[in-house]
Every structure is written in C-alpha cells, then in structure tokens.
Image (cartoon, rainbow, N blue to C red; front, side, top):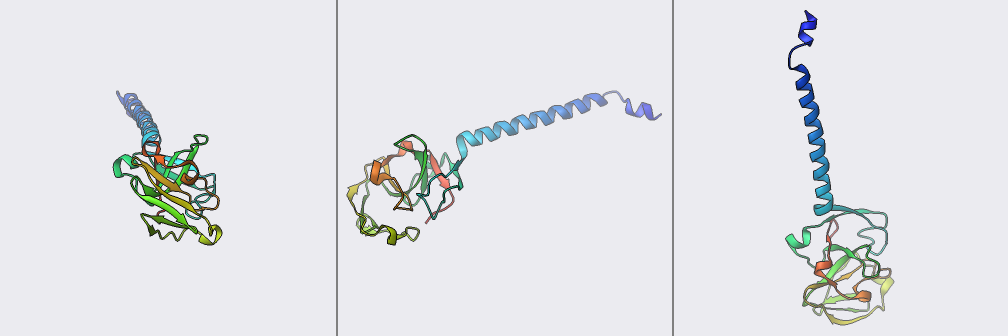
Length: 174
C-alpha cells in the first residue's frame, strides 16, 4: 500500500515544476543583480587617500548611478567621474557648481566670496595655499579632495563637465 502512495500519478511532474521555478527565480535574481550593478548601484574601491578623512584608502563606497539625473549635483556631494589623466574612477567632493565663483585664500575655500565651513579639511597642513578667483562654467562642477594636500582635483585639471559625472557616492556628507 505504501508503494501506491509514492507512485501517485503526477508526482514527478510537481517536483519538476518546483525545480523549474527555482531555476527561474535564480535567473531573475542574477538578472536583477546585473541590472542593479550596471545601471543603479555600483561598488567602487577607493585607492587613494585624497578624500580622507571622509573616505579612506581601501574603503568600498557605493555609487548611485542615476543620482545626478534624479537629484542633480550640489555642493557637498561626493561624485565619481573618470580621471582626466587616465580614465580611472575618481571620487571628489563638489565645492561649487556652474555660475558660482571659487577661490582659496590661505587654505580657506571661498564660494561666491563667502568662506565655506569645511571641518573635514585640515587647514594646518595646507596653510599658505592659494587658488585664484575662478568662475565655474555652466554645465560643470568644481571638485576638490578633502585631503587637499594630497589631492589632484579641479585646481589641476579644471571643472568637470556634468555629463562626465557617473554618479553620487552614497554616504558621507559634510
């Protein structure tokens, strides 16, 4: 009698459907992970110390790729864009947007002639640093590293076009 219970008609088909569902769910999960990775959220390893103390070398940050289109890019945002030197991903802080004027006087950043409070910047290591008053062109952002002494940024390669910004870094803000 027990053999009749295990040999029910249709039992193997039910097990086969369950296996097919598991495979389908796995395929959908892999597809969604790829979509998320390619177009929404990308992990980026930080190799330089130019953003310390906010983001240290060896850190892993997540870049929200549709962020610039959805929310815009604002002063204080951490952004990722390709390095003008070699195309590798670079993380910097936006300090001014198109139409604003920036300058650095004795290590203090001024935007539109007002000093910017930047508690994350160690002014003692960069005192005596100057950058001339510059207007940020429309459609660009001026970016700087928090570790100003060690950062290669817009002071070296100029403003970054908004269309070059790959995404917004999720996490630290001033």
